[in-house]
Length: 331
Image (tube, rainbow, N blue to C red; front, side, top):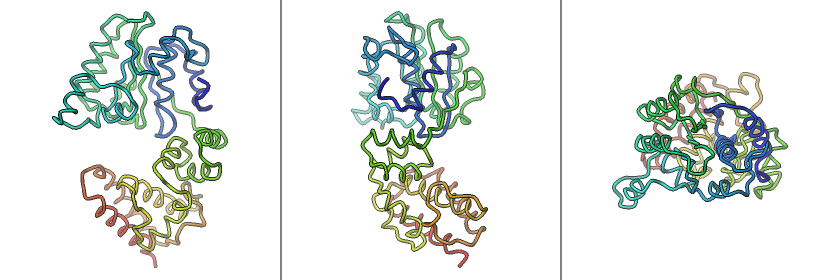
């Protein structure tokens, strides 16, 4: 498709030219796994496929754009399906509307059972059927085993594309039944060009791309959620002062992500490596390797529970207080 990011379009051409009934697209978040997976599904189902993927104009491509394709099953957490505009099953939508439960953050086993039934049906458009699973690591053990059985004995006209941001969490048996593709990191000029196409100033694009560790989709998300490149540059020394206002309006998970990046860069500098997420000039002096190492372990531990329904304000204050302590531990 013409509006596809350059580094994704190149990978799509490579995958379309290959055979295989199941692909696992893997790599860190922010590199376009979902877009590549959807592009591959579009190419497989297209009525007039090209070496670059789906034609973008046929009835099949239009049905995918409208999220109504009868031969494409999207298997995702309900929260993500709602965000990306995919319809939930009638029963799931009814339960959520009636407030019987909240939208799931995992891929539910009920959705997997519906997908297994989908795989057993005849193709509606005659181009076969496709199951898209994203993020594949959001399957629990029961759901993953249900998918494994289908992967082991797939119907003749069903193909699978799994996209993951943490493939190491998948069952080894699932990984072994898929052809694996590791996502390509874009060059900085490709990423900046794409961010400019999304309406971001070139200078801000470079700054936010650095904050995102070179991952353009995460950089785009930063700007869409109100992150200011100037605010990002001031963050390290604000944390050293214990200034929680620098994280004003941030969710605890966002604050934790920023602090992990700060800790990473300070440890990198301590060992003589260049920082990745911040310019070296904006980093505070921190002489205590032990203090940084202890802080890094605590941040990793906190990440396991950061999505729990704690008081967000109190959690931010606690994170900032601990950051201040760590950053001043060698003084």
